Length: 102
Image 1 (cartoon, rainbow, N blue to C red):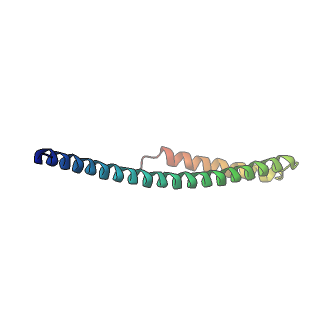
Image 2: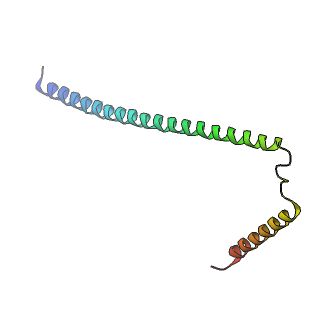
Image 3: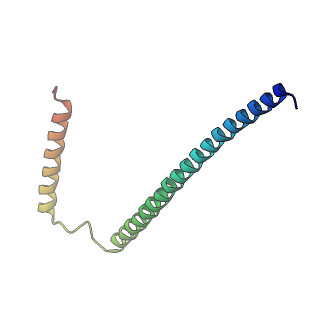
Protein backbone atom coordinates (compact mmCIF):
# COMPACT_ATOMS: atom_id res chain seq x y z
CA UNK A 1 0.00 0.00 0.00
CA UNK A 2 1.22 3.46 -0.88
CA UNK A 3 2.43 5.60 2.07
CA UNK A 4 0.19 8.55 1.02
CA UNK A 5 -2.89 6.30 0.92
CA UNK A 6 -1.98 4.92 4.33
CA UNK A 7 -1.66 8.45 5.76
CA UNK A 8 -4.97 9.44 4.19
CA UNK A 9 -6.65 6.36 5.68
CA UNK A 10 -5.19 7.13 9.14
CA UNK A 11 -6.39 10.74 8.87
CA UNK A 12 -9.88 9.60 7.85
CA UNK A 13 -10.00 7.15 10.76
CA UNK A 14 -8.85 9.87 13.18
CA UNK A 15 -11.53 12.19 11.85
CA UNK A 16 -14.18 9.48 12.23
CA UNK A 17 -12.94 8.74 15.76
CA UNK A 18 -13.25 12.45 16.66
CA UNK A 19 -16.80 12.56 15.26
CA UNK A 20 -17.74 9.43 17.22
CA UNK A 21 -16.36 10.99 20.41
CA UNK A 22 -18.39 14.16 19.76
CA UNK A 23 -21.54 12.15 19.10
CA UNK A 24 -20.91 10.12 22.24
CA UNK A 25 -20.64 13.32 24.30
CA UNK A 26 -23.84 14.69 22.75
CA UNK A 27 -25.66 11.44 23.47
CA UNK A 28 -24.45 11.51 27.07
CA UNK A 29 -25.67 15.10 27.42
CA UNK A 30 -29.03 14.12 25.95
CA UNK A 31 -29.36 11.25 28.43
CA UNK A 32 -28.56 13.62 31.29
CA UNK A 33 -31.13 16.17 30.11
CA UNK A 34 -33.70 13.43 29.62
CA UNK A 35 -33.11 12.23 33.18
CA UNK A 36 -33.48 15.80 34.48
CA UNK A 37 -36.69 16.28 32.52
CA UNK A 38 -38.09 13.01 33.84
CA UNK A 39 -37.32 14.10 37.41
CA UNK A 40 -38.98 17.48 36.83
CA UNK A 41 -41.98 15.79 35.22
CA UNK A 42 -42.28 13.44 38.19
CA UNK A 43 -42.17 16.37 40.64
CA UNK A 44 -44.85 18.19 38.62
CA UNK A 45 -47.01 15.06 38.62
CA UNK A 46 -46.66 14.76 42.40
CA UNK A 47 -47.44 18.44 42.89
CA UNK A 48 -50.40 18.18 40.53
CA UNK A 49 -51.69 15.19 42.46
CA UNK A 50 -51.35 17.06 45.74
CA UNK A 51 -53.16 20.10 44.33
CA UNK A 52 -55.96 17.91 42.98
CA UNK A 53 -56.29 16.31 46.39
CA UNK A 54 -56.49 19.71 48.10
CA UNK A 55 -59.02 20.89 45.54
CA UNK A 56 -61.18 17.84 46.18
CA UNK A 57 -60.99 18.47 49.93
CA UNK A 58 -62.04 22.09 49.44
CA UNK A 59 -64.91 21.10 47.15
CA UNK A 60 -66.13 18.61 49.76
CA UNK A 61 -65.86 21.27 52.46
CA UNK A 62 -67.86 23.71 50.33
CA UNK A 63 -70.53 21.11 49.69
CA UNK A 64 -70.74 20.36 53.42
CA UNK A 65 -71.09 24.05 54.20
CA UNK A 66 -73.87 24.35 51.63
CA UNK A 67 -75.74 21.51 53.32
CA UNK A 68 -75.64 23.13 56.76
CA UNK A 69 -78.70 25.34 57.22
CA UNK A 70 -78.16 28.92 58.25
CA UNK A 71 -74.38 28.60 58.32
CA UNK A 72 -74.01 32.18 57.21
CA UNK A 73 -76.95 33.54 59.17
CA UNK A 74 -75.54 32.93 62.63
CA UNK A 75 -75.18 36.63 63.44
CA UNK A 76 -78.03 38.61 64.92
CA UNK A 77 -78.92 41.95 63.37
CA UNK A 78 -76.76 44.01 65.79
CA UNK A 79 -73.73 41.79 65.10
CA UNK A 80 -74.33 42.10 61.36
CA UNK A 81 -74.46 45.90 61.61
CA UNK A 82 -71.24 45.93 63.65
CA UNK A 83 -69.56 43.65 61.13
CA UNK A 84 -70.88 45.76 58.26
CA UNK A 85 -69.46 48.92 59.88
CA UNK A 86 -66.08 47.26 60.43
CA UNK A 87 -65.99 46.07 56.80
CA UNK A 88 -66.91 49.54 55.54
CA UNK A 89 -64.17 51.06 57.73
CA UNK A 90 -61.66 48.55 56.41
CA UNK A 91 -62.70 49.30 52.81
CA UNK A 92 -62.30 53.02 53.48
CA UNK A 93 -58.80 52.51 54.89
CA UNK A 94 -57.81 50.31 51.96
CA UNK A 95 -59.23 52.87 49.54
CA UNK A 96 -57.29 55.63 51.31
CA UNK A 97 -54.03 53.67 51.08
CA UNK A 98 -54.62 52.85 47.43
CA UNK A 99 -55.39 56.46 46.50
CA UNK A 100 -52.70 58.08 48.68
CA UNK A 101 -49.59 59.41 46.96
CA UNK A 102 -46.79 57.47 48.62
